[in-house]
Length: 439
Ligand code: S3P
Image (cartoon, rainbow, N blue to C red):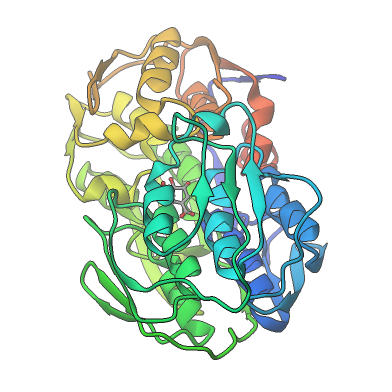
């Protein structure tokens, strides 16, 4: 599917759960809520669940593990059967394009002790899995992968009388997917588990597991999970809007003349708000206010208006706090005055695409002056984006970023392969149209 996004101005919109248009529920929280509920004992109810390609892959895998669920008007009900409640599936579990699904499921399946093969799309088969294989083996999980350390992953069934090992696990990356995989497997450990992270990553799993009764003790980059055997309590919560989805619209408001968007009930977990901090430091006319807390997650209001931005350097721990936002950040940086440099972001090469290469190649196609470096990129700012045709490269975030670039371009941007957006944000074009963009 090709989508042409024309140059626009004066975009005005409000996104809220009580208005006609809302920001969809957080993707990371939706994955966790579905899977953790399956491991709990009893019925969980999650509203504002993200109904999209990647979350359906997780739900379909849960069905194959014999977990019952229903999804109606974004409310997910899951009938959890406890830590050992999965049934061995007849076929390999297909995780589509979703690294969150395969890495989190690996941890949950390891805890349950059943034998399973986890596989996915050709794109997913290229993504590194040694980062979860090594710690899982240390916990006593029998797991193998292809000789490149990638999917398919084969987990061998465990003697049901035996648990897993505890001990100390040093993670090789600051990655919430890896951390969550280890935490989930650790639910079956027969002694205390200690996890050290090399840097701070999103902490949704810790917050949600605590709300389900897991006695986690967190001290900086160290998590201690004392051995315990109480069943996980079911969840009853409403998920906040996805800050990573709102990010595309926030930048749209900032780079489009005379625009103003208000967002209500968006997740403002500080481990996810790096982009907001960077845009503010660049001079963006952005207001944020925490209004409530849901299951340990801060939620609030964001107001974004047309702004004049200045270039900036992004590096260090800040990179992880905005790890999914670099494609859209690059579009904002192209419209800023002066140079923007991104460093320490080599992890972007292992996302839905080699995001550094794909981003640079595709933004160059629409006339943006961006240069690839080994661990990031450099953008010459103050650009008037000419526009043109570019490809999504099978990356939903790259596709949405190209679309937003079209708004600030001279001739519009045509995005090839735009249907990949359905993986995470099926309502994206409807919401863009609601702002006044003539699509
Ligand atoms: C996610 C963690 C991040 C992020 C991904 C979702 C999660 O990946 O890029 O979109 O839900 O835990 P890493 O943990 O690999 O950095």
